[in-house]
Length: 181
Image (tube, rainbow, N blue to C red; front, side, top):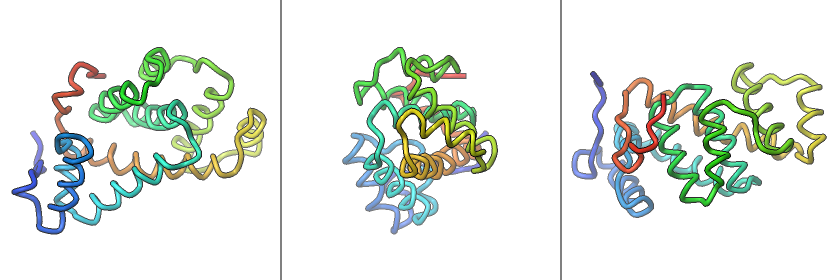
C-alpha cells in the first residue's frame, strides 16, 4: 500500500499545477510519477528540468536509452523500466537494444557496451571510477563531456527510481504492456 498521493492537476499544490499542465501537454496524460512528485513542487520542477537537460545532452537516442535503462534495471525500478521501454519505442530505438537492457544482456556494439559499463560503475561505486574504467570509456570515442552527461542522467534517475520505490507508483496504463520484474 502506498502512503503517497498521486496528484491530478486539480489536487496538486498550487505551485505544481503549471508543472503538471506542462507534463499533460508533453505526454497527453499526467504520468503517475509526475503526480507523486507534485507533492513537492521543487522536486517536480527539478526532475522536469533534469529530464530536458539530459535529452539535450551529447547522447543520441540509443545512448540516452542505455544510460536510462541501465540505471533503471540496476535500481530495479518497476515503474521506470516499462516507462523507458515505451519511451525508447517512441524514440525509434531498436527493440533488440531495449530488450538486451531489460534482460541485462551484452550491448550490440563495443561503444554502447563501454557506455553501459561506465554507467554501471558509477551507479555501483557511487560516482567512483578507476583510471582503467575511464581509459576503456575514452578508447571507444567518448570524452569527458559524456562522463559528466552520464552523471546528469544518473541524477534524473535517482529522483525517479527512489520516488517510485517509496511511493510504489503504479505503472501508467500506456506502459503496462512493458511490465518488468
